[in-house]
Image (cartoon, rainbow, N blue to C red; front, side, top):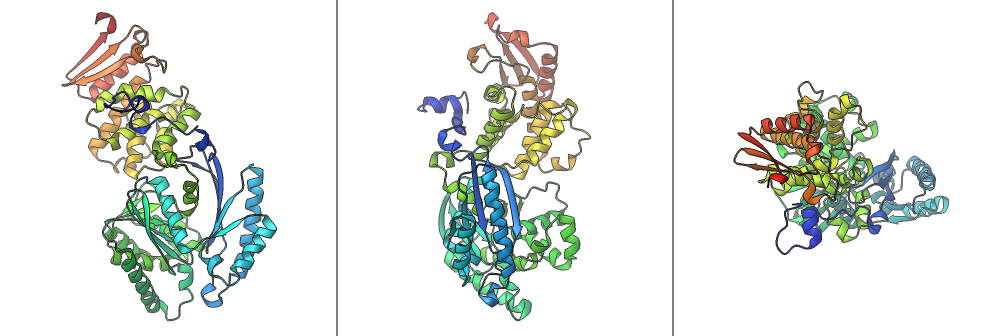
Length: 521
């Protein structure tokens, strides 16, 4: 951890701790500062422009057009005529948008519909001729690999199976320790199911056949499945509706098999149009949900996952990951994003590191998972200062819990949000999002509040980044909270700072407090 070197570590590691020196401004990282990718799928065509911290980029621009290129293809063998018109129109627009944003050339990939249709090559040539956009038509295994890399963008070191469902195909990829392993594709895209004769029984037989083949090839059961694709995300949103789940962030939403099976029954028995409206799901997407639900039920039966996680990251994020140097891939996406946010928005960029060192003695037994949340909180502690003082606390909470951050599950979002709320406010009674607090236990709530109050006090002792021994420090030992002041920091310990110090002591249930001066040492 910062300021707590281990023997044998390099000077850089000693100075910056387990999260390393910030590299979001490294030339290789800045090369990826704004990258545009296009995904031409069987159901939709999408442009995403990434910006910000390259390891955990923000979505500078994100536009999707539901074209339905693969609609009816099982019967005709060709791309849908109306879908081609919509896709070509969308791609013309995307090229114009890219020019307006001064982007480097867009990276564009096309998947199952384009690669399988008899007129796919001709349509690809037409797109390239009319738009100048270079299209890469990838096979199923490459699609699976890129989707898995998209998951790795958000979950470095992930282990499990990535299941990416599109309109015309479904791909599986194995992840082990952050590496992509076996990859397989199948014709289990829900657009195909509309053309299967024989109704539900015929579909079930078709699904069982292909899922069984995938299970035999993958030889995997019992771990985590990462679900990628719009149909899976729609099902997850319906699961939230059924459970009355308070945080409507789909990325890293976790479910177990029993809960998903209950939701699939719920979908089957419900009025889909009413559900669609309640959950803000498009008509085109909702029409595919019942078919995707049948596939998911069979996947659960065959693979018996211990956990099901939703990933909003897939092939488009995989294309960005593909362009990253390894040293960037190895970084923690949460920490890099928070560092970027601090550099961009904080009044004193760099003070987050000083604040982290200051509060760390209060969390001597924290594991690395907790330390990274403490680090993230300290980096973000001041980025919302422009909000009205009466609303800073809830602005902080709202921003973090609903931010487009990766490497952060829902309980961690709430922990981080609570700590930042208490950076600006002592009490949280009557907050409009109290229902979210229940996503973490009472002990975690208390730990987050302690961190918030420690930051609230530490922010008063605003020493220069290079102050080193001139800065104040805390010690917490056997129920005694000690504040050590230096001649340089002592003038900062005024009436308000003392009140915040005492509030922190009460939060810790301190038996005693001591305030010492280095002059007395």
